[in-house]
Length: 264
Image 1 (tube, rainbow, N blue to C red):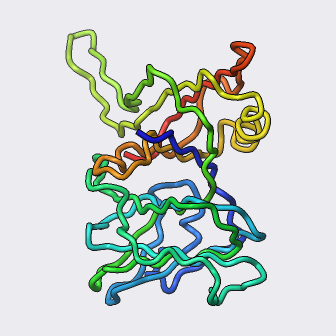
Image 2 (image 1 turned 135 degrees about the horizontal axis):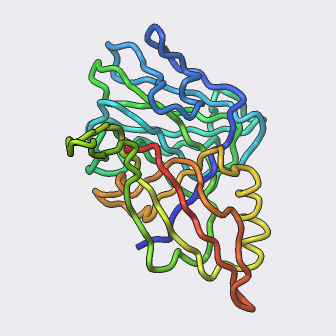
């Protein structure tokens, strides 16, 4: 088991696509509404998405969320270029090569796939993501996440908690009749880093909490090792509860992470 991966999505200065179906613009991949998506036209084997981060940034992770219709035949190629290299992605810029698209074979209940790349950090302003293997079908993406793993040395502690937030309700009338309101169920995650280093708190955790608060999303994969279940180990949502850290021992801080995910 690998240490959990925690990524704050970097903001985009711009995002474009090789083409877009009517009503499904590329900018939809930069908001946090999972039901508002980008969709390509049909009829091609590959489509590309190009992102401008505004300045050179270190990245080691890409996720494409809410990919309706994604299959094991899809592929992903990640290219990255610095501001000096430009948008042409010339020789010497980063190229991942053609990779499997899906993070894993097992889906959340929605059946929507998660595209995945995780590698050594590269410096980039411009990133191009090419989805291949479409066989004429449309590509659909709800959100693109680009960023760098928080990189904590020690993993979260036992016991971690995994559950569901049911947005529906059930009650009974005065005549003992069931009154039911069905609604989506969102995955929830509660993990604790009981022995984070002081410098990790000061240089990584506290800046993260300052930037995202309770309103901006975070991506977490509880175990990023390749596995058919890796998609179901992915969470993308907002933090809840206490956003602080506790100086628990002379050499260790505790950070409790509570998250409600929009992936379902």
